[in-house]
Length: 397
Ligand SMILES: [Zn+2]
Image (cartoon, rainbow, N blue to C red; front, top):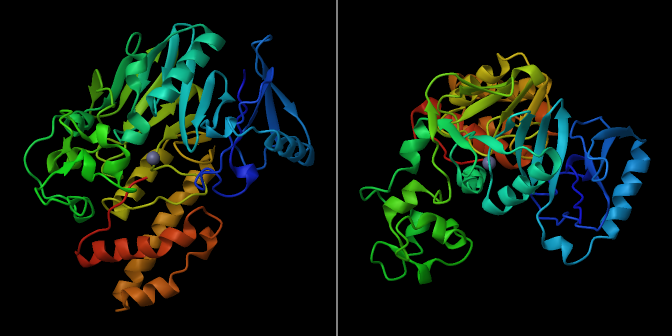
């Protein structure tokens, strides 16, 4: 049984974000996957029998027709599977998909260097795909950062792999301590007002309800405020190799460099650089035709991070969500952040109110970016708060 995976961009905006079920586990001997570069209509066809990976160029209308027919043939049962695919980027570098989360892996003669494991179920699937296709074990799992939705599930590779992460991951994964204040949204779950969230109180769409066991560090059926502050990282396998500056690993004659990205998004974010493949991979900071959700801690931290990424000489901009693209896409995101920061600063300098700036700083040239309509106003408020020295907006992904 082979699954069929498609990139989202050719099927319209934000399909994964809408939860549209596109996992088509249709019995099929070939596997189609879309190279995720806008304008590139190549469809890769891989057959189990051949074990190879070949590119066939077909016209866009034909590709669309093929996709449409395949969509129609999806079964109800298949629709519950996550969308999964493996796409060759260049050489022996691949990008793998689990719904709207992506990781990358580099195949060498001595094993695989991969990035984020995403979750256990995906990791089991990927481990099987890698061993079936390439017949080598995963030797390194290299984290982009510690967030649960990217870094969970690595234990699946613990029999063969080293785990490489920024040193700040360790503090983030350490046992919960102290009694920090509970965020008000979480405190609202505490029906009996005893200061902790019992399992029975964890209801609705709250993160604690959705991922109770990933928050509950000591498995006592209670999530306290220290466990809330630590986050839902119970299934993140701690790095066995850490670093604080630039770091490089080599395997089978191939190289991967890691460069810390400072404070943007989280204090352990890094970009992976594959120098021989001229590719970079980063989750949540680097985005292609998509704006970040929040600008934690500041827009300046995001600009610095994008400058670090774009100081690298590369072609392929590989992301943890949605589209992948080229270096120009990463430069476009950097330009958005810079125009946002400069625009708000100019407004503040001219004595404008926040509402005034939000009305006039339209950042129109980024209208085609995913989330532009949702986050622009919030981003302006965030930069405004930073410039005014009031509380910065928080957010992830
Ligand atoms: Zn993310």
